Amino acid sequence: MREQANLAVTMADVILFLTDVKQGITAADREIALMLKKSKKPIVLVCNKADNFEQDKQEAYEFYNLGIGEPYPISASNAIGIGDVLDKIYESFPPKTENEEEDNIIKVAVIGKPNVGKSSLINKVLGQNRAIVSDIAGTTRDAIDTEFENEKGKYVLIDTAGIRRKSKVKESIEKFSIMRTLLAVERADVCLMMIDATEGVTDQDAKIAGEAHEAGKGVIIVVNKWDMLEKETGTLEKYKKEVYDKLKYLSYAPIIFISAKTGQRIHKLFDLINYVAEQNAMRISTSVLNQVINEAIAIVQPPTDKGKRLKIYYGTQASTKPPTFVIFVNNKELFHFSYERYLVNQIRKEFGLEGTPVRIIVREKGERD
Image (tube, rainbow, N blue to C red; front, side, top):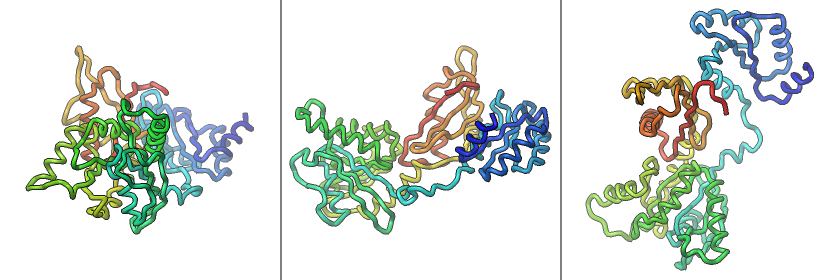
């Protein structure tokens, strides 16, 4: 047993030391604490069975005597104090050293239907003809990666084959191009969803944008060929409304109007890419998240069904890219989609999260993966 414990400690980045607040510090606790201190690893000391939280919280102070840091009182059976422990574990992970350079590179997939100007945009950014540009739809057959650096940061630009309607996909090479485009979306941090200003949002645009949304990627809607459109007062705002009306699920995505041919507004694109990448990778502390959830509940009470009311115990962020939150409730069946949408809107109102999907996972108390 000791050998197994030593192996586990050696392999771990962070050690979670679980004790019993009711029993107080035992001889075994002292022996384990001594072994853990020698490991030089980050230790999170958890005092379980703090069911009477305020009273048992005082009892947990005794565990400072172990000399391994702040004790965190929790009640595993009542799901109390878990969020603070998760935050501490996350904070305790060592900084990344390997591939740190690569982590600073934002992967940007340029997606859209054929002949919308994807390759033209990349060529304008690079200042040279690195991708083939042609008026013939489907010229770009494969995903092309190009490393690029400017004063805004480091990027990999992924030019993709345009996706045509399935009814028009006859050649096997065209099917392969579609598959490579979807893989490019999976690899990307941010997707530039390009739309032809002269055509507006088509059904095929909606299909392609939906792939980026479902993949949880940061999305920027790029309306190209804006210089070719006849304009009058209010044209831009009217066009924005039309785009959002047809792409309702992308209401969180910012819109930028450009001309890949003339370079209009392209200089603003990279600030927006950086911003959306940050939003997609945002992490929110459990305590702040629950404050927002509690305020949301106070404003709009959770729904009831047949005399039973939804109770929300607490929430915590499970992951990023996209920001994903786990909400613990008394009954998942009572957590209606409309209330989920309301909570997401309140979270967005507080933290922004512009340009990124937000996902909610609902679990009942005590439910495990």
